[in-house]
Image (cartoon, rainbow, N blue to C red; front, side, top):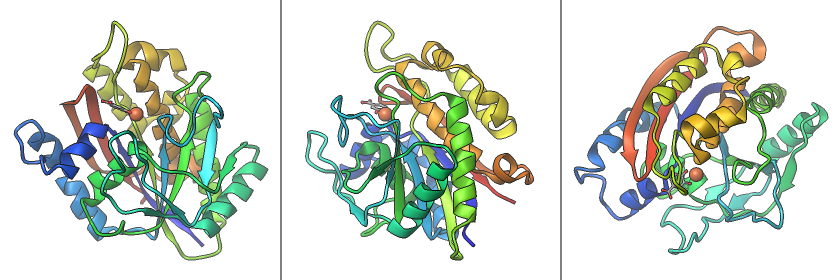
Length: 285
Ligand code: DHB
Ligand code: FE
């Protein structure tokens, strides 16, 4: 059967992708940020999964105010890299895993979570920047990716607890897939940031680090924090962090009464563009 070996959590700041694409990673401003991902790139090479289930948010690229799915699973064979206004990023197209994605959709929908099925979707920085941070600049991404888009852009957004419970259902789905696949689940977006209005530029490092602590130690309690706390404490775009609870809910301790995960890597850096960057790698035991 398929199994989840690890979860990865990372911010997706678009300027990070631009720094990589334009060869600026060694500039003094960017050096400390990319140093925090050196371990991660080596870890990815040593722990290459068969499939990445990548939880991200679309930024009005594939979706718009015309259609706003709360949760959307990509069941396509491949996904083009989106043009976000400057041309598509010069990164490989994303290869999907239609069979596993369809199985997860079947299982999770029958498990009472309503998903939108997406057979065509361009993927924006929310998905490609985490891949670049973890995989560098390869000719092709190391494995198929199942994109899972969450609406954190237009209110109402899903609660932390719904995301956490959904992660548990995704783990049940993956565990019931009849092929010996090593699956990683990634939660992306965040940490504290606000891109507009009088509080633009807001960073709350103590709150971010408390979030990381509790995500590791007590995700069920973290899941009960209301969405308004994310907005007050972590800024309007800090709400992206609820996506991390989907990945955390899929880990063995949360989903199957297993042991606590091992913290393989933890990193926090301010600033990247207007944003705090957080990153964790948790391994199932
Ligand atoms: C920016 C955009 C994002 O989507 C994000 O999550 C962080 C930063 C930006 O434009 O700087
Ligand atoms: Fe974002």
